[in-house]
Amino acid sequence: MNSERHLLIPKIESGIVIDHVPAGLGAGILELLRSYAGLDDAQITLGLNYDSNKLGRKDMLKIIAPELPKKVLAHLSILASGVTIKRVDNYRVQGKYSLQPPDHIEGLARCINPNCISNHERQASARFTRLGETSHKFRCAYCERVFELDELDIVLP
Ligand code: CTP
Ligand code: ZN
Image 1: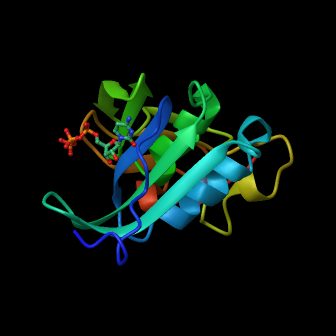
Image 2: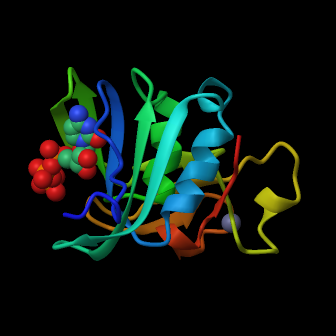
């Protein structure tokens, strides 16, 4: 490779890599991470449109932080389920798993049905339940309408 023409994103000593991000989702994930108080000054690199055997094109993020807070993972599992979370220590990938959609969503997404009571009653925080173990469909606890995970309106912290 010609080093004058390529600037590679360096490996990290320790932190978290979010890999296999479908191309186009990386910027939204960055926005989500940066809106969390604990991560707003973390070192993060974002790569867009890498070649990927699995996805064709993918985005990737590298975050210098010991771990991602639980709430961030819950948020990510709505925004970008299917991504791979890799923990790096001592320059090595020490563990990885694929982030699955949650069974329940509470307070992290709004119902997109404009008539849904969860959008009108202050006390009613939107809740959704997954239709089945392998499903990407969720039912709103209030209006009972069923939505695809990627249709839900994410609530940033
Ligand atoms: N990585 C990093 N810093 C390290 C080690 C790995 O940034 N110290 C990043 C690499 O840049 C690469 C990814 O983590 O993007 C590699 O993860 P790994 O699981 O080792 O790669 P593969 O096994 O090739 O990936 P896959 O999960 O697609 O099989
Ligand atoms: Zn609803």
